[in-house]
Length: 309
Image (cartoon, rainbow, N blue to C red):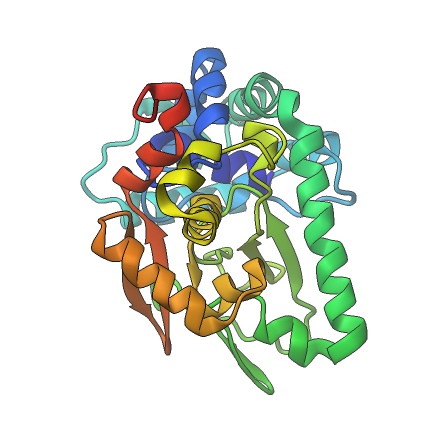
């Protein structure tokens, strides 16, 4: 359910990444008309209704759909009130008012829209999405066995700062969650980007959804022959740096770890790419986050678009 909701952001936001470019092309061609109900409940920016991502008894899509169908009238009223308050300039359609008062047919329409959107836009790619999320779970399990929760939480995201008993992360808005003895679910997500995300209502079961490291091969095929001309143009190391940033933003330290190169080498290559207009860098807490630019994305896509001979 989180992947369904977060993928709606990826469809509507103009982002400098090649990770989702092929998926977006196919998804936009298949998107059902009823998806407009979902984009109303999850605007391109800001608060999205918490009830869209219910906690299910299992991780199956069917269980998530059924949990959504069982959303209480009180939950609908609270979330729709929050949605209207968080987006004061956005006029909600008539059906949203019916949803707010718990009309079963209004909730049924949302459930149908989620089910149709998933099967049209996510289901064809679900095995790839599932495999990459599973890889992230395996990586975290290894960290846990070697370094305990200190290692897991400290490396959860470039902005993560773990000092028992507090975990701090960069977030679009000021938001505190006090566990008070409740467990925290760590949910790796394929479609999550940049910063982790959680539910707005701190009274709901605590969950932290965070972005995974992507394998670009899911969109562009095997790695060895992916960008031969780009490597000739930039050099092997800089091409690898640009390709890695195309998979997702990261800090200098994280980039060096991903590519298994010294941090000083990563920093030097980033400087060159930044001076060429292929990379942007900005502070993120005590670190610096690097992002590929539109020009960098165009260069990565050059073989198909004609930018590179």
